[in-house]
Image (cartoon, rainbow, N blue to C red; front, side, top):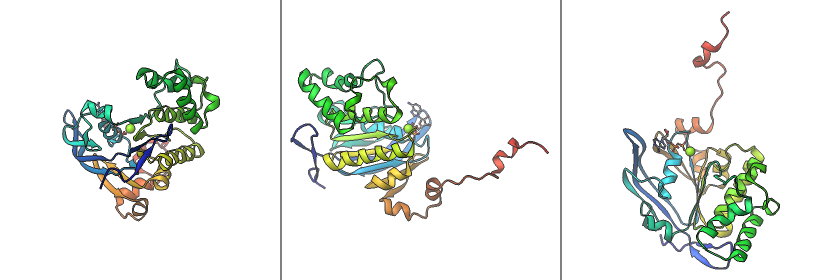
Length: 271
Ligand SMILES: Nc1ncnc2c1ncn2[C@@H]1O[C@H](COP(=O)(O)OP(=O)(O)O)[C@@H](O)[C@H]1O
Ligand SMILES: [Mg+2]
């Protein structure tokens, strides 16, 4: 498939850059003798939203870190637009933004300065240009009134939105989100899911979301992968996932609360 099927429209100008695809080829990752990722092969197409689900500790964050070159494969390969993700120059050629689970905002900086930091450090614009880009990103996330606030003054949902706005000023060709709705109430989670889908629709930015959030995955995912025990147990569309009969997948998506679970018998008061 040609990489130019979709174009990423820069949110800050009318320039267009091709959306990028991501390929994992037989990716294995071990920490010591612990195999976290086992032979993962996966293609994320330019301009799609791919949602990676899986239980805690199944290797989702580790997989995401390979795409931005924060972890290196034990064997196999990860490429972004055909370029090796392990190669430092790839991050100079392709604009990738990772929105971390906890937001990773600088607490001593205002929201405005958190967003301006990347542009200032890379000298991408003068202060007037930075102001325009920062305010545009804040406006897209409905955060204009939060510019002078500090992270400690923000609600959980606002922090997540600031983290997304900060990624957006990088004008990314690839947006990666790690648990963007964790710790949020269902209404705010739905808002964040809408924002992720809107950014992808407006700018055709290739999007990979790591999330436990079943509603988010089924509503905004073009395709979904489920990682369990380091293996890709499911790969398909939301409809295919709804129809999956795989007992592990069904249990993961519909966990049951068993009040008579024998594992907890010992917690009962002896009679
Ligand atoms: N740098 C590291 N060194 C050793 N073990 C790690 C490292 N990073 C992650 N792990 C382990 O790899 C497993 C998968 O982690 P992670 O990808 O963070 O899981 P999750 O699916 O919850 O995001 C966990 O058991 C974690 O403890
Ligand atoms: Mg994680």
